Length: 220
Image (tube, rainbow, N blue to C red; front, top):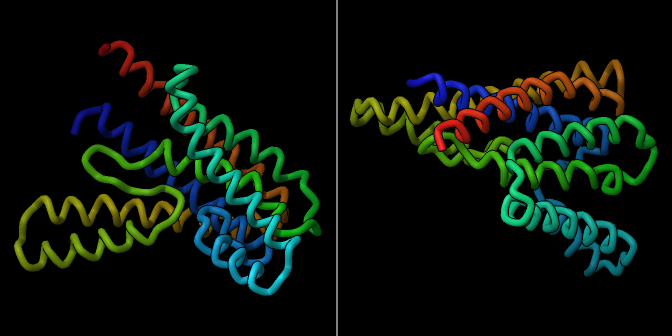
């Protein structure tokens, strides 16, 4: 594996740590609501609609709209502004980290997660995988599936590529849950301000992304 490939993997796993941290942060600080995905929010919106709770429906509709805007921006930003999407995602997440620390802990939990809905959707689009592997850095279900499949296939076939798959997705899974684990003591000490502790990780990710972008431009 070359230096550029190693750097790409370091960045991928670091973003998985950050994704796990914000997943844990959302659950710990905002009433057990996951801010990285829309499945639970859209499910809840449907149930609230059937129950006639218009306020809650509108709040969750706003969350879905923010998620959609971030996905759209992941196409528009590189296409029309020419910006590197990964660096843009990291910069937005750093800004959101600072914002989260000043939002009141007592506010509506879904409203309090609006910034996370936006940046996690953006991160999902910016960090879609590494090399030949498609792998999310903001939630772990597919990484878990791919790890189990890789291990099972390796036990049957003994092929090296199956073991490599299991190692890649397993390390991504471990990185994600390391971020979750870090969010717990941070929450106990700082509450909603624990989001600020992610800034050094984002600075390191930004440095890696800048080096990757520079190497790509030099090669071009």
